[in-house]
Length: 81
Image 1 (cartoon, rainbow, N blue to C red):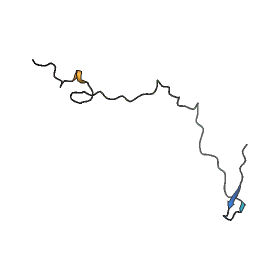
Image 2: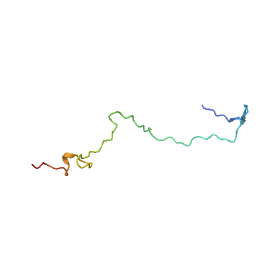
Image 3: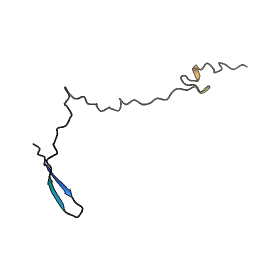
Image 4: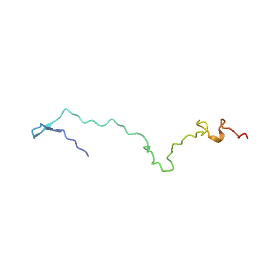
């Protein structure tokens, strides 16, 4: 069981403390309400669950994203001899 004091300690700056009764302050209960059901906790993620950012594939010929040099339509197919 908790007990709360209604005394206030005041320091006046000269090295003396004085105790005064404070009766005009009321102790109020917190405004939070308890939720219904089991609390949802975020589980700890393992090494396999972490998602890494992947780099986008870029073509080395035309420098566009989304495909590589093998599937590039701007790449010359064969050499003329």
